[in-house]
Length: 321
Image: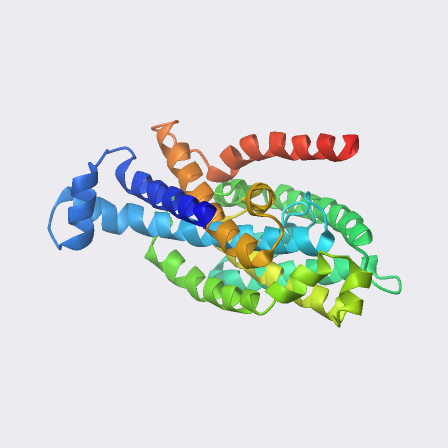
């Protein structure tokens, strides 16, 4: 309960900071006034039209990526599992790049294409790992290989269409710059659907964490449960990257830290990871657009600068273990 209250407080602080800080700093009192009253002031216009939709979109992105990462770490029983590392994000990314470069007139289908791309990548990974069952180790190895292949395909597509790359690069870096109410409105139903589905999978992932044999003894249909969790994780990750691009490491860092604080029970791990993921993305985005002012630094790059060392720490810790 203490961790839940602490993470919620961090999220509120991150949201408030996101509304206060930027090219023009707005005092907390003026932010509160803008949120609670309708006025024709500069603060009101900045808060409602620029910062609030951006912050709320960041909240949804953080929730989606953190929950997806928590699920994947649980079913793979590996703290290094993450939508970006095992190829799921790259599948959605490749589909999105195809839409943006080859079919820009169909941009309205970007969220659907991103989800289908991520789902296709997950299906390929699952099939490659299947050998009388899909073990967590084989899934991880297949995911890393597919991730490399899809990354190469994205690079090749951009090289072959170099005249259109400029419009895709900010998305490839992962950015909340320019995100407005339509982005939030698009992402919200995907997030709600994914979270509702997640509630029904908590028991399954708690059993899968114990190992396939123990889960079978306790009455779980292991392959079906694992497949359902992968589909929901893919749905959430695909929805997030369709709106902000290739934001990584949220699903890696947040669930691992939360697991150290509250243990492995997903009844607590999942909601706190969701809150922590939202707080991390919003805080990182606020830092990215204030530390480097007047440059809008992509939040995906900033998260990678902090997430990559954390990944290496986990890797070395695992090797030593």
